[in-house]
Image: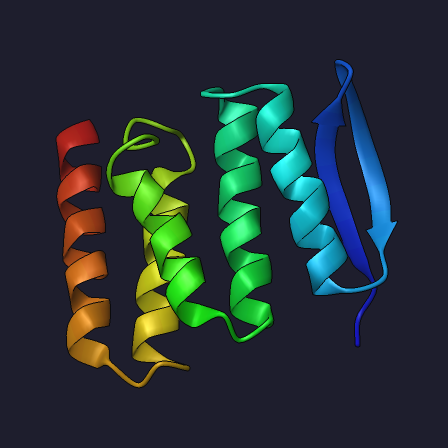
Length: 115
């Protein structure tokens, strides 16, 4: 298993912590979300939480977390990356390319609005 480094903010400081496993990494990212709610820091931590859930084969939980980028974090700088990851999760490990395509289209519409 590759080394897992958690990049998060705590007490106003950037921390780069090693995590022994994906469960610990998820815990640290959730902790970071609470430190600065509704910020870009929290959005990044939310996206990374979903990534940890996906690596733990908790795919439905990961999609539920990625879906926060369709609502709570829809204006985040991380939204396009999170929606892309959600589509890849659906089309790849979940084997549901139709579901994945919906995330890709939502992401494409978001990108076109920005341009």
